[in-house]
Image (cartoon, rainbow, N blue to C red; front, side):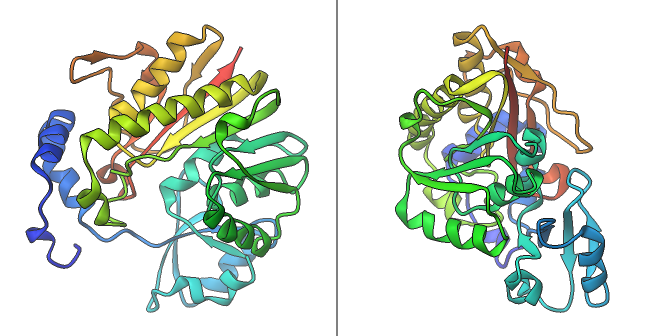
Length: 310
């Protein structure tokens, strides 16, 4: 557990909201949210094979495979400064939380496709997408923040990514383009990441949730409009707020008759989708979304939806 975890207080409104969401599972959610997060790496197959990387590390490190990502491993050893490993400097590995690897796996980009990562910085998912594309085709890695583009560029360069164009612009500027696949890893309230940053529970307030949900609807709509017919859009967040997850997907499905939600088949424990919250009813198709609580797999909390344009 995190130091002083018993004395850490959640805001009364947060507790009220999440007890309504989780019911009897609230206490275990709180426990896992205040526990250490396991270190995890992803092997960058643009530079080294999974087998070669495992052979390099297994003498000094215990590696446990991540079931839903064949390149992912939880890593444990005497050292904790994984970012200082020579393998990290060489771009052989990317230090990345296990749940964060899910959206690119669901997106399943292929060599030769034209792909957009709309909110790409600092580059964990963009570099993962590029390795699945085998540096073939075109990946547009976009972000709205100039400060965030620096680590994005550095990480892509370190990983040997060569098929990517980095752009700096608001998501709504993507008009008239056609992409085979799009990832919208949307900015969010981050309530699935409390165990990584206690600042999340200090900053949380319901008004910010409603404000960011409006931005998320705008981003997912622009992304869907720029998707080719038959193309795939993956929407993901690291929050557990229904207003930022199922509500956003329900809104898109109700607005676009050619948006089809697809099942996410994956070897992973998951929580039930939310069909109604605080008097709001959501499209029943949201049952196909992937909702993960920290206690489900001892990871961050995450939400992922896969949408096809038919």
